[in-house]
Length: 251
Image: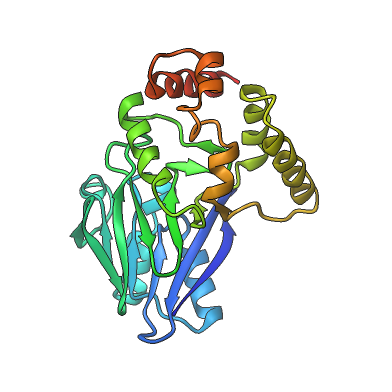
């Protein structure tokens, strides 16, 4: 059985420690703030035995060296991490990682960066998606191109709808404002946005989110919806996605 410990760090990141109660292994999903990760692990009475990086950005892999020095853990991640931050094992789409006897599938979700990956624990119904998708949003397209990013989001869309998506930032309130602009007639979105506003007013987290809810409300996951395609143009979903991403960048 695995247990997820979530905590805020840096200005708007979420940190995640995933603990296997059988093997007592603990994996740090990304390392935005080494000091915070080591403190949270100590408070839980866990020892970090692994790090899994989703992509190379410093607020995701910048704590690798410090945590490895303190714990002796092993570090796995995409090839793009190598040469920028310490890594022991390069993993790619279709491979698996193990936390004790619990398996996580590695999924290519490139687009935000060209090597971005996600980790799907099918047996637990959870996925750690980094900056590929957020509640009501998706990551900026720093390195990829629209067709690539849409294909990545399509892999996330194909997961079981009840999957809990653990994304890396608390961006939901600003994402909601753009989503309402992009898809103003979506009743489910309007209700979701109201809930988000109430949570943030009470200083509550909006992450994790469910894939099912995002499929109904997240405009970037709905770029293949005829209503959005008609509104935002494009004869193919990746073209509509590109228009949405460009609009969000300028919003």
